[in-house]
Image 1 (spheres, rainbow, N blue to C red):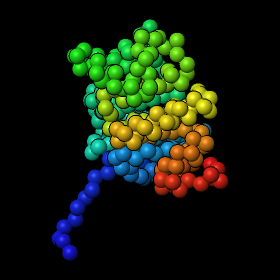
Image 2: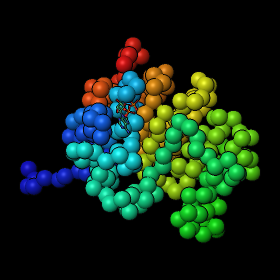
Image 3: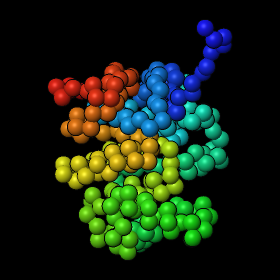
Length: 241
Ligand code: ADP
């Protein structure tokens, strides 16, 4: 036997994590889990079970009250407020409501974050076009958000989220405002990004049909506790939460 031990660092490590809001509500309790690079993980559970709180702790919108949330070796809860922007630059985030800037075109919406960090136009252009190609919207670069369907707007948001090649894409109910067919298209886009770019994806959702179809790892939250952790492909169609 070889002497010593090799410690394998997980991409995301959450250890004995609690979030208690100022009003005394415990939104997340004693959460411990690891996520590997390249995984696609769903977070499900009833409304109020702590899904958004967990997601918010990953991008440091909320700090854990106790315990550790570690991302790529960085203890996110311990980051100083003035360095949180560095973490956010490495993440992509997609919300239920699209949050696109209405007076900017599709191209400009996707380019905006890169302009804000001072990237040169010559670097921005190929990145924006590549991101829009990944979501199948290269032919809409000059359109404004109000000229697009809901599904197309969400695809612009996904392009905006992946434009700077994040290692982690966080999605909070990304299909919440979309009909079943459009939701399916959005999931195909996310699936392709995960498979082709190797981007780790964490997605909170209410939509069990999507979860059942995708056959990925599923975390179930119940009153802030991790009640189940289904390995990839083991979430059964008969399961209810
Ligand atoms: P979910 O996303 O599963 O609906 P949330 O994480 O939004 O769950 O909420 C978990 C619990 O924390 C709920 O009881 C909710 O009312 C409470 N909560 C969420 N955000 C706040 C907040 N900013 N202040 C106080 N309580 C909150």
